[in-house]
Length: 159
Image 1: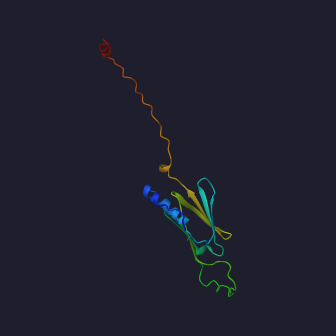
Image 2: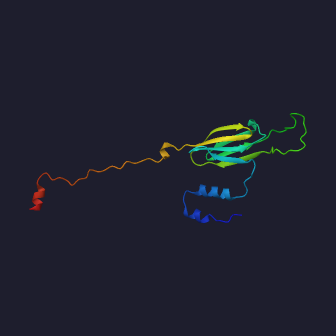
């Protein structure tokens, strides 16, 4: 149950719809806990998402980056027991399919993905285009000085 209402903010802001939608999603209790993951900052504009995918092979995982969304899916191959003719008596290692969706900030791009020791690492970099970076604007000084009168009209006005 949510104890706050964002409706007044929706009425008084323009262009922040996505931001408040993300807050609503974060507050909801419907997010699954499988598989567990970490989000790390590895540099000033570099991040890494690590997802625990033990038991999944590289071919059973997929990563899709579309617009500002990163989706990581895992699907186990059917008939896993048929490979070695063994019978599983207890399954403590989760082998269920999953889908994790991450909302990425503007200008965040996926640079690399690797699978090692049961962890899927997805490296992200925030690259702001030159046109969007702050730039310094030089201030020009005008050379506006009182106009010089060359024809002697200033003397006529004074007289």
